[in-house]
Image (cartoon, rainbow, N blue to C red; front, side, top):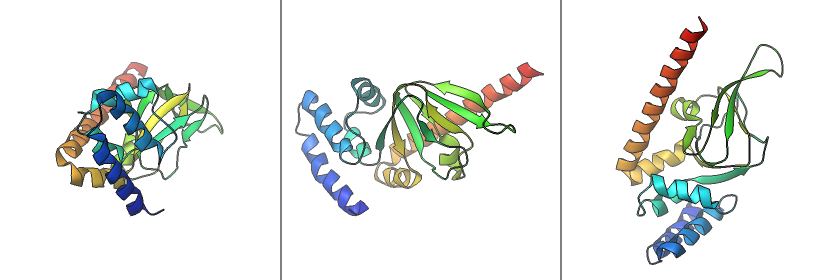
Length: 186
């Protein structure tokens, strides 16, 4: 099925969402995203998602996101891979690890929980993944590719700007944390 066809199907269903009660809206939105993804949002995942967006933004944003579910120990992406999407953790915990000079030896850069973005470096610069991401528990993430972000920003410029500002803030915060950690070592 072509990308256009998928978007057309979502657009038809998106219109149906506006006529639903709040309880039915959540179920319909989960069904909408599950058609292209890996099932329905968990209750915790749906709560996080709704806290981040205004209700009228949800149907528009859903067509650009990909829901992924990972089992304990499953690799989300490997260092050096070409995937340049950013991921929002909805449930579970994710470890970010860096390869060392010793084969098969990694250091943990951070452990992240719900409402945390990961994968932002490759998303911003389009380069290969600098870290490996691995699920420490069962985890649920929504992924946004660079191409889908461009489409989302064209459709909802104010939301694209908000996401861009959030990414810049996140990168600055993580860089400051890195500086503090380096200073603590020396």
